[in-house]
Image 1 (cartoon, rainbow, N blue to C red):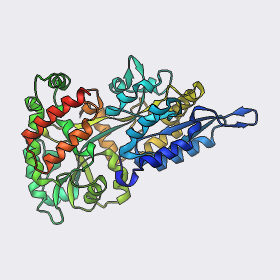
Image 2: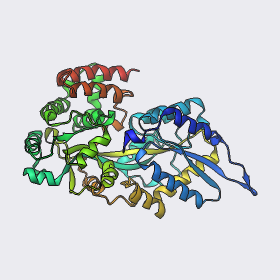
Image 3: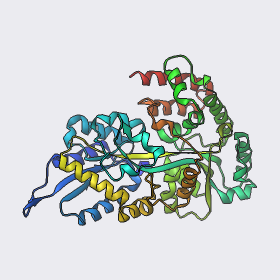
Image 4: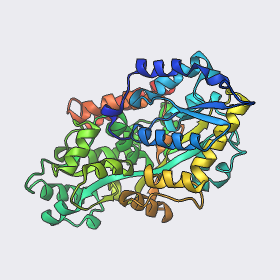
Length: 422
C-alpha cells in the first residue's frame, strides 16, 4: 500500500504484459540437454514492485532449472485483472499470485495446497485459519501488518498532549483541539480517500472490538438486526461524529495524506506500518509513533496478515513445484528473509523468521507479541464481496455530510445485505 495513484498501471497495459507472457503454461526452450521451468508471479503491493524485481533477478541468477518472471501489478485494479486471467485460461494465469481477505474467496477454486512446503509448517497458529480452506493450507501469509493513528511526537509535545493518555475518543477530541492550535496544523487527523483507507480500515474498528461480530453480522444479513443495533458499531459512529470536525474528511489521496503528515500539516494519520517506506522516502525530521483508535476505550492496534502468497493449481506439476521452492526460499532462507525484513520491511508471520526492525514494524511486532491486537474482520468471510466499493461510497457521503451517521448505518445495512446475496 504505497503511492497508489503513482503506482497504478492501467488494466490494458497489464493485460498486454500478460499476453506477452503467454508461455506461462509451458516450459521455455531447451538450453543444452535440460529445459528451464518458467513461472510467473503477480502481487498486489505496488510499493514493493521495483524491489521485488531485484529479488527475482537475484533468484534467477542462482538457478539452473527455474526462471521467475515478475508480471506488472495494477494497484486498485489488481483483483479485476487477476480475475480476467483466471476466467480466460487458468493454466496461463500467474503461477504465483497474492490474495487474501475480501478477494481470497474469488480465487479459492484456483489455489493449490501448500501443505507440503516448509513455509506452511512455520505459520504462527493465530494466522493459520485465514489461509486454510477445507482443512488444507492454501496460502502462505506475506506479512503481518497493523494500523492505528500514526502521530507526530513533536507536534504532540508542542500541543502539550501525552499520547499515552489518549484512552477514549473524548480524550482524542481534547487532543485534537490542542493540536489544531499549533502553527502549521490544518487538521489534527487525516484519512485517505481510497476505498480501504476511507471505509474498510476505519469501519473495522466498530466490529473488531466486539466479542460477537461473527454472529452479529449473520443476524444482520438475515434481517434480524441493523448496524445501529450492534452496540460497538453504533458507538464507533458516535465517536466518528465527534472527531469528524478535526479531520480532512478523507479528501486526500494516500500520497497526499502521507505528504501532509510529513510536512506537519496533519498531526495524525489513520494508517498502518506499510506507510514506513514512504515516511523513509520523505526523510522526515521528527519522531513518530502509533496509537490505537480509542473507540469505546479501545487501546489495541488492528493487526492481521496483509496478504497471502498463493500457487495456481492449474499450472503444471513442474511449475507448482518451482513456485513452492521459490516461496520457501523467499520466506525461510537467510537471503530471502533479509529481503523480506530489510528491503520490504515485512513483519513475518512464520515462527523463528526475521522481521522488520523499522520503527512502525517494531510497534506492530510488540503488539503481536503481547496479544494487544484486534483482528481485521474484513479479512474473514464476514465481509461480503463488493462492500469495499459500496461501503466506501456511503462513507464518502457521510464524510461530506450528505448523510448523517444514523442514515449511514441504515443505508449500509441494506447495501451489506444486497452484497451478501449476490
